[in-house]
Amino acid sequence: MSGAHDHDHAPIQVPDDVNEFEVLEIAIRELAIERGLFSAEDHRRFKEWAESIGPWGGSKLVAKAWTDPGFKKRLLENGTEACREVGIDWIDPTGEGTPSDYTYFYVLENTPEVHNVIVCTLCSCYPRPVLGMSPEWYRTPNYRRRLVRWPREVLAEFGLHFGPEVEVRVHDSNQKSRFMVMPMRPVGTEDWGEEQLAAIVTRDTMIGVALPQADWDATRAPSETAPVG
Amino acid sequence: MSEAGDYAVLMHTLAHVDNEPPESLRDLDRKPAPWESSMQATCECLSWRGSLDNVERRHAEDELGETLYSAFPPHTRSALVVAHSLMDRGVISQDELQSKMQQVRARMEAR
Image (cartoon, rainbow over all chains, first blue to last red; front, side):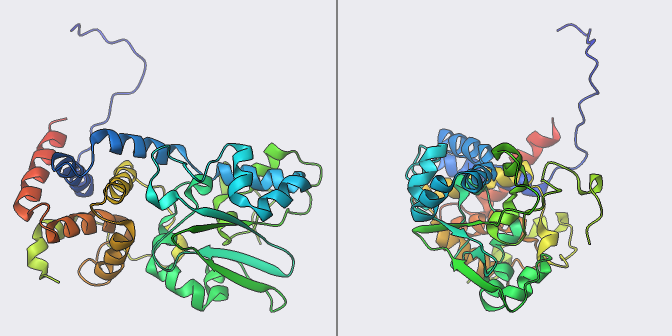
């Protein structure tokens, strides 16, 4: 190979330290494949699917529902079926039929009187086809146990405070049901289009631990926006 | 449940974790490292193909995460518990895991 290399990129950085958890992960995977527990192709397909999904499916659903009353009605009546209209198939989302994704999907509408929030106390079920992979805190026993007992206190940790006039409803996922919150459309977004609206419907607003803000979306660094509070 | 010594190969990784406990749930919000996504895929494959059900794994993570692996941050516990469970079930032995980890480490150090 020629030694000439006139690309203008920076030199490739080789990490100083080997991450022991990366070592452990590779070791487990390779041993599992060697034992025939699953194939390398199984793993590759699932990893590609998992890395391709995110909260944008849910954002799109909410923005469409905010701008199309007919779609909103269909979404609230039968979330599983309405999702097909935006290309999300709950019956076979991976194309591989992973057991944890064969479920019914319900959308919970927030109102001035009712705020919804989701959890899975049994394990950590999450509406992955519309929200992507769950955040780490969602999977902790801390969140899962405490949310059902003290929802207002847990929501306050996320910066959400509700007065006694607002009922807080906690929805516990189970093996066959997944939930997602449809937050209220913020004031000041009346003339916005679907794409602009979708940008402010972030992951946490659809879990129910945050409210959408007209002046911020998850693609912008918070430091670029006006101070909160 | 077996003694911690039976899982020495896993306890060894404790030396590599940042041990600062999170102050609140929101402090746990972080972008997962690539190995974590890969570990999630492994968990799904094990469940899908019937070797280690996701609910069983989650329960083991809850239990062991508050006992044997309580000093480890939550994002590391899937890897620990999957390895732990596969050893408990006799699918792999500690020696095999240790040997495989040495091979992987040598490959990574050579890059």
